Length: 196
Image 1: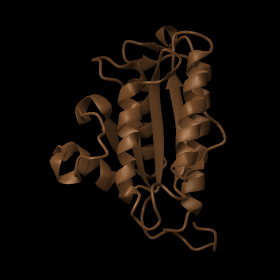
Image 2: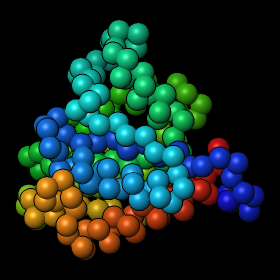
Image 3: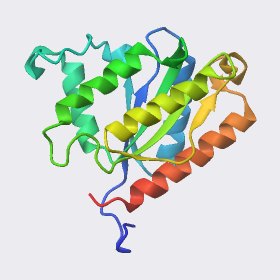
Image 4: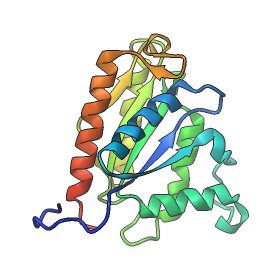
């Protein structure tokens, strides 16, 4: 249902961007958990795993046609999406370089109308070993989302002590699971109100 009270004619489309470049990424486990919950709520989901994307460093002077097919797929998915989940591990107190690099490529949507991710809904998750790092990363993801002109879900999910929260590719921390559930429900609700 949109703001006018009319039913949507198609499912909400959600793009998850994140993970890490290492095999067995715990942040990718969290992102996949979020996308599963969103899919169970009736949305269509697409995963943009930074390891699978394998993007070169963003270069403002390099034309779009000189980038790999994975970038073209990422941009097409970003254009089609009503909402996003950004999920980053924390490297040295902030968002990982791979996630930031993937988000830097949204620059190619600057000439769209509306530009960038204007008005789209974004939920944020970050993982870290210590007590502060994941909170810092969520703060930086929030700044990126605002710079891309998006609407940010009020509840973010920084997961501290990630080594205890994710075991054998499963989220085992009940508090983290509850927060993830709250985030995904709010994301679907807000994205469902967005005019297409």
